[in-house]
Image 1: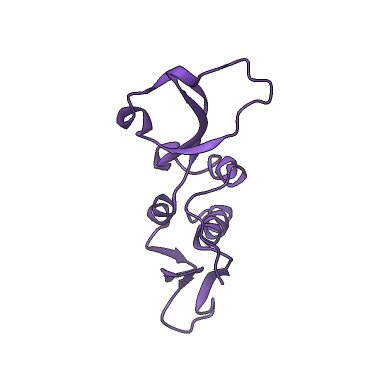
Image 2: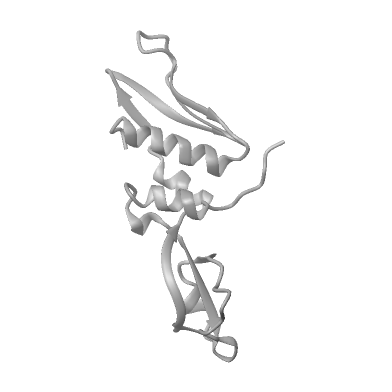
Length: 142
């Protein structure tokens, strides 16, 4: 059974930030404290929590002054948007296919390069998208 996951982990985000445009991320990791609860001397530190990019605009009780750090994070929707509809490899076009926990680039004919360029099955679609994006980047197809 597929695991429900809505966004990239901090580790996945760090890797994707190396080659995806940062503006393609629609979330960020950080800690934001409301005015009345901010305590920068907290010894245990703060967890990185994912927030939507427009969090500050929608929540006037929070201030960018109360915000520690920023690291991009991609939602499932942003990852799907980052995947090209098709890629060309050795003269053949391969088209994106998405299932509940599976991502593939395939063509509709048998060729010397095969029907599938990349396929991945994973516990969840976020991890599968990240894996395919990494493969496409390695082959300089993204």
